[in-house]
Image (cartoon, rainbow, N blue to C red; front, top):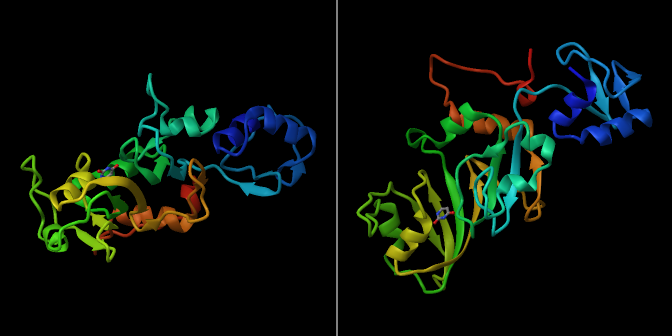
Amino acid sequence: MRLDKYISGQGLASRRACAEAVRRGQVLVNGLPAARADMQIDPDKDSVCFCGTDISYTEHVYFMLNKPAGYVSATDDRRLPAVTDLFPEQLRRRGIFPCGRLDRDTTGLMLITDDGPLSHALLTPRRHVEKVYRFVSATPLAKQAEDLFSSGMVLASGEQCKPATLRCAPDRLSGEVTLTEGKYHQIKRMVAAAGGSVVQLERICFAGIPLDAGLERGCYRALTADEILKLKENAYPKTEETSWTFSSNSHRS
Ligand code: URA
């Protein structure tokens, strides 16, 4: 594989930035400065250090995005900005996509990856992966709202919800909801069923991974090895017969 393709494919730099780093002697292959950006390397055997960071080939990439309002949960939209527009071209070409959907006006934690099977496993209703949302309502929620949520409410459409946890602020104008499913506009419709009207919604936790408080809206960062492990534990729960190990970021062996 070409060195610049390998580095850009990991989302570390564009090919042009890679070529500049090579010219400056900031890219080492097996400990020696790379001669050319287009030199061939073997991702399984060669070690590459890019601007002081040791990198190794990962089969998949996983990012935490702090989604801003105004972006649709898609990879492409003819009319509206899509969440993947917030990522550089070399990652988009890798085939990244949002794992699940948030409404256009919802903000907060969104997992962006190119790992289709993991995304599918996290989203399948059988898995009951937890998502935590913080909302603000224009009107106070009813006194019995907590019970309504925990008993598994029936929405105005007739859809049955799984039991959910609601924690309301004392003024009952805001709160947090933990869901283990993902119906269309679910929080908005559940809050409406309890007398509220959502005016702000943010996802603050997904599959046990909290939104990084240091991550500004519209920004993303790579998940840590521990966070990826947590995702995999949620997606593929261990049974007594199965166990799997994970080495940092799914390195090829
Ligand atoms: N529930 C909603 O109503 N909207 C979202 O974006 C996510 C959950």
